[in-house]
Image: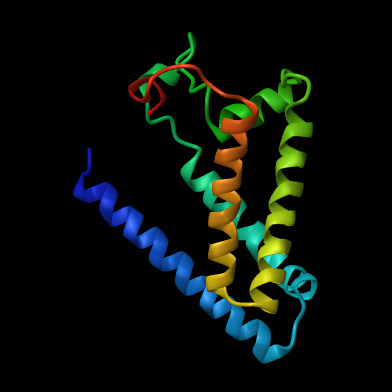
Length: 152
């Protein structure tokens, strides 16, 4: 179901991503920086803005089904921090968070390197090819039995 509100957000996401990648490529070439140098120069500001934005957006309980028995939201940043202070964080959560941060650094490093050496269009083509290979590989290695209506 296509709705104007979702369409507007989708168009804004595509446009902002394209504009950032073009800006990134021109600045990287203008200053002669490698992907690693660019990652180093933006990582502090990126982490600061991400932490601020996540605390601002994810601190509120918007859905009533997320309330636990005490009337507190069980699925927000503040709930996680209170559980952290009380020592009730399940094993593996901190490792998962750190692994996610490390993977985000790798994605940024690869995108900075690829856009710096080639162009934003090449980066998008490589990303699309990767998605196609993942989907085809999933079908080859993990085939599903069924007709077309069940598969799609």
